[in-house]
Image (cartoon, rainbow, N blue to C red):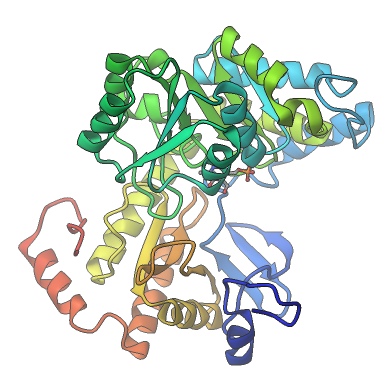
Length: 419
Ligand SMILES: Cc1ncc(COP(=O)(O)O)c(C=O)c1O
């Protein structure tokens, strides 16, 4: 509890006293090759951002944003339903619908808002929402607000999902909501099975692609491409323009009937100002670049595999994540704070994720790779994490076991999850 009598879950006071509280640090400049200049810390290799395709600062995207400011100004001065719709929003909606293979799309001013507003627009009392236990906070909050019954299934456990669907079979509207890539663990939802079960039980399926658009699939089109599924295997394709796409805003690509409900029922559409012109134009330009330059996605995939191999070589537990998010498992919160602090001292920008963001005892560093990081930098970052863990005595014993497993060789450079 702080001096105002408010409970704060982060141990900010103790962390600041020990000098390990590294949150909300101010970036002063984005430098070439995923380096950043951070106030009070100097130049660092960025291993903690969502810039998966390294597109932030791309001249073509900057130019599109500047032209939008010149034409429309900086604000939209209204909500979408009233005076706040620009032709730019329509263009972006057509563009993202095409990118995701959907009939239409609705964009909003953030991904967080898109999740809350969409869930509340679609379900209400007498309906049910069924969520994966590790879904993002914005899905959890949407569920809290929507008035429907909300039940969870164990993380990525398809038998448990089916049991939930059976249990609520009689509900007229059943909405299943999952993350495509789970933001704290980096693992991928079993979409083929989730989609099959939703069809079998007549449930609508909503998938949050915040960390899969631009990342999964050979050309970065996301989770359906990754699994080779047809575009209609997901009813409500939600995502953000704030990660691989270097802008702001959220979208839902879907069918006309569902989009209409989001426009006419969605409180985020009706009561929150629309996406700023520069953000809309930047997102459009970024989608064009992703389609025109698939080599970026290829480079990202190479870096993901390379970093996974390095961590494996060093016996570091990253829960065998197959995506660009690598949870470096530390155990208790303070081990994670201290390991992150060690990395900062050696110029690696990576952050500790403590409880309650993740379950107690599973605090971690959350490292993210991107397309622009050089192999030498990935080598360096992995070595710094290993050395930090050694010097703090964090992975004692476990390393040996992992070394032995790696020695047995599974052939693909990744170890099984040591749990
Ligand atoms: C899985 C997931 N969904 C939604 C969001 C919210 O997106 P935005 O940052 O565009 O509000 C995030 C943001 O981190 C996320 O990780």
